[in-house]
Image (tube, rainbow, N blue to C red; front, side, top):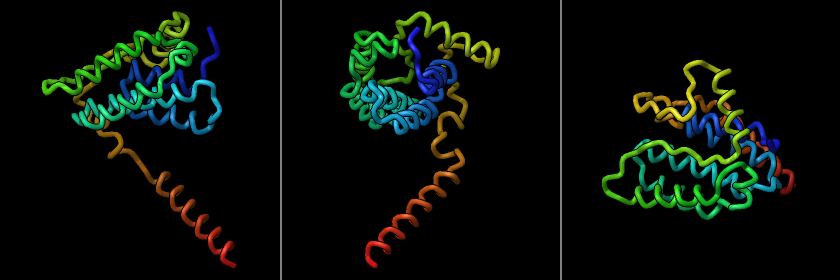
Length: 181
């Protein structure tokens, strides 16, 4: 099995077992920012966008879901998806079908499974699920009654994010004052 980044493995578990699309976005975006020269960077962005699209879709925000799914389709690269153990042709078909369904008035959210083609990757994910918790099931459906899962972006603790923004704001002001002096 190729050496997949831990963040990608976490993404797959959040995506297929916990159905925590918000955390998918968080974990892979952090990796992407820390590794801007990664050879699969465009597809990593596309996978982040797929997760964000599903987060929007599950919350009933079809417009946000369409926007992110459209962006994902432009960022995903077949050769990069193959390096990530994903069937690129099937992925493109799934996303195009979902995009079409999203534009229908009678759209009803259902989870999506990425078409993984690397059997060793799938087995590693299954093993990680089993070792994490007996309740963690690969490809289980979203719990549509879990309000924290559905609204995580509004309910999570953002104190660290606010503190970092304030730190950056102050550093910018200090640089500006130095430059003016």
